[in-house]
Length: 248
Image 1: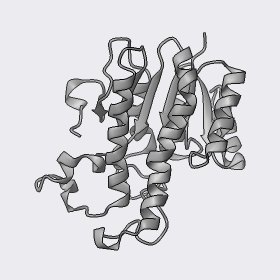
Image 2: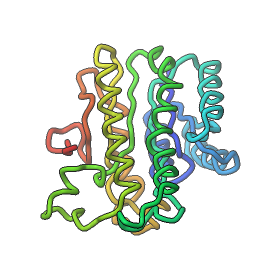
Image 3: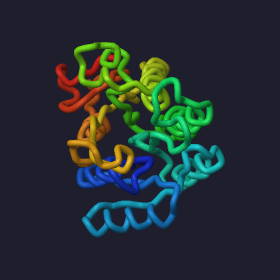
């Protein structure tokens, strides 16, 4: 039976590369995107590359959109094998990128709506379909800037970063990951957080030193974990090797 994978925010960047790599492994990939135009374009490009890709309209900040997407996948396939919660933003309102004292309620709301609330909404909507799969995998695309250990270590390169909305949203996402893993620990479903590191994408304004494909590799590894693989952990390159696990 063909495995079905949904990747949110898959019309570009790390999400697109995650869809491509999973598709190359034989999965049917659902290209989750808000924009029909961009999503269809991405799905078409994947199909031209030999991937079985289908566009799925989904806005993770809109509950009605999320439920419509879940209903469609349920009617079409009856189950979901892989959910990669990749959609995320840094924010484009005042206070989203400035220092802590510049943070605004509007910036926090905008970023958390997509990066945290959206992940919970999507996961809950698709959980019945994930339970219908033989052994589903949930991957939450987090970031090393969400690590309290890294961010509080004066010797770590990230220590110089001082802003609230995006890092705090990824710290919250890490906790979300832990809690789902605890709830699902007696099921075949595995839930893990992935750190793609600093990639050159629209989100980073193309300042990253890594390619989107390199960033997607950890999500792909976690999406294809064997039955004895880990759950409830935070991973970087090389997952699930022990030295690839990151501190919360």
